[in-house]
Length: 178
Image 1: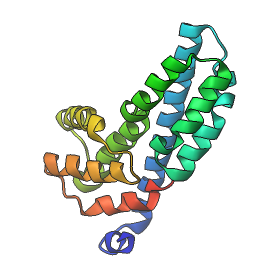
Image 2: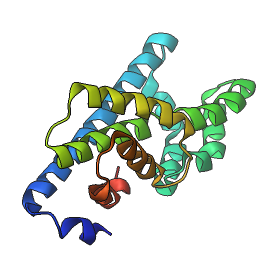
Image 3: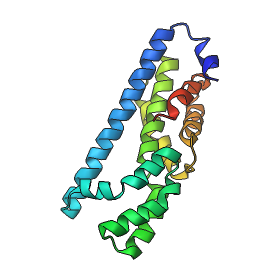
Image 4: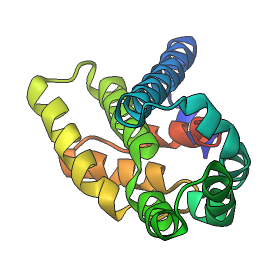
């Protein structure tokens, strides 16, 4: 599938350079998101967010290894219990936020849609960028917690915008990493 997307490309080195910039964009956006999340944790709770992160490190590793956050709920419960979070609160919020808190996939979907649109059309208008933002905001609440679901939703968004989706197969090359 990836080779099928690369073969018709005239400028292979330019496409791979663009793919590299796409990866950097998603990683930097996720790091900014984590920084903002940790800052909000500190401002609201007046506690060190890194200490809580250490308690939930096992849940993060399980999530990364399985690429499905729903699998790590038991580890989330254990981390919250060890940190001292009330069981009633953790039993409600862990499944809720595992399902609803899809900021990472939202970053990937919006960046992917912008990347593929730029790859096909050369530039993205402000109206198209706003439509990508709105469609991503709406679609993120329906994203299933399965691997590569973000790429499928990105293809749906591109189809809604009338952008050719053939180049979206490039996303499968980096989806496992991001």
